[in-house]
Amino acid sequence: MSDEALKIATENSKKSMPSESQKQFLEDSDREIKEIIDGNRIKFEVHETRILDLVRNGKQGEIVELEYPKGSGQFKKRARFLARDLTSIYPQKEKEWTPPPKVAQKVLEKISQGFYVLRVTQKELYEYDIERFYPDE
Image 1 (cartoon, rainbow, N blue to C red):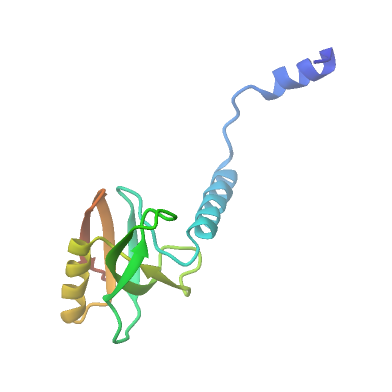
Image 2: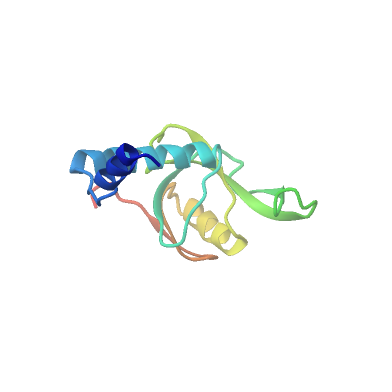
């Protein structure tokens, strides 16, 4: 490395915290990249909360077979829900969500009570809190 390149590296390698507007831009970019990665599916991370608006149709909770893990040739049965993730950067986009069976039972219970907008929090790998969402909270 040349002396000039070393000088530039030394000057620019010092820790420099982003401004608030830069932080917001980075968070927005990160969310958009996650949307691209997730595609047409809703996926949760542990301790993540999302507000889901379940599409009102007669096929919520339909049983489908999914290859899991992908490319393994092994299939699992899961309940499929169509929802708009109101916490995403594309809240109008309908996506597929195939939660674990016990979670699907909780979702079906909420639908049977007439609740379609839900606050969903993944607490642990297969443990979720499912609550009716009130917009004024």
